[in-house]
Image (cartoon, rainbow, N blue to C red):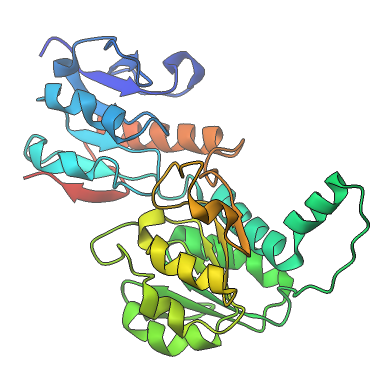
Length: 313
C-alpha cells in the first residue's frame, strides 16, 4: 500500500482539525475514482447518493479498515459487509441527524393534525376556510424506535403537552423519562396511541413491521408518522387503511422510494408526504464534520471508532 488514504465526501480543505497522519481524498460519488481505492483505509460514504454509489468502491478497497456512513441507517451498505476485509468496521452516523429528523417528525405531525396542507390549498384558491382540528396537546404518542432520534423526538414533543408518551425499542430499559418497551408490547400499546412515530432502522426484525395487523390495532383516526425507513411499513396495507379514511399518515419515507408519480399513495386521503428530507438540512454539515473529525482522531490514535454497528468476518 503506497499510502494510507481517507476518502471523504466533504472537501478536506473545508474540514479543520483532521489528523495529519493520512492523505485525504475527496470523492462524492463521481464516476471516476480520485485515487487508487486500494490505498484507502477509511471510507466515508457519500451522502444521499444511493446504494449503488455507496458500495461501488468497496470491491476495490482491500485495505479498508473503517466504513463510515453519514446516515443513521446502514441498509444501503449492509449488503457489502460480507465482502469487506476481515475485521473492517461499519459505523453509522448516530447523533448527526437527531435534531433535523426530530424537527421534521414534529413538523409532519403538527401539519397533519392541524390541517396545514388543506389551508395551503385554500390559500392557493384565495379561500378563507376555517376548521376545527386536533391538537398534539392532551394526545398520547407512541415512539417506535427509541434510539437517539426517538429520544430527540420526545425532547421536542414534551413542550406540546402530550397526555402520555410511550417508547418502544429492540430491548427493554428504563430512562429518566420512563420505561422503554419492546416490540412485543406493541399490541398492548397501539390501541391507545393517537400519534405513532416510526423512527426505527430497517432490519430483518423491522421490515414490514407495520403490517395489516399493526395498523388494525391503531385506534380510529390515529396518525402514523414515518421518519425511519419506508420498508418498515407495508404500503399496500397502509393504503387500504388510508383509503377507508380510518387512519392518517405523514410520511418522509416510502416504499418504493422515490415514490413514482402515478403511485396511489400520493392521492390517498389524509396523507402528507415529504421526499425523504429528514436529514438534509443546515444542521447536517456541522454535525457530519464533527463526527468525521472525532472518528478519524480515534482511528489515528489506534482506538476503536464509535457507532460500530457491524464488523466484517
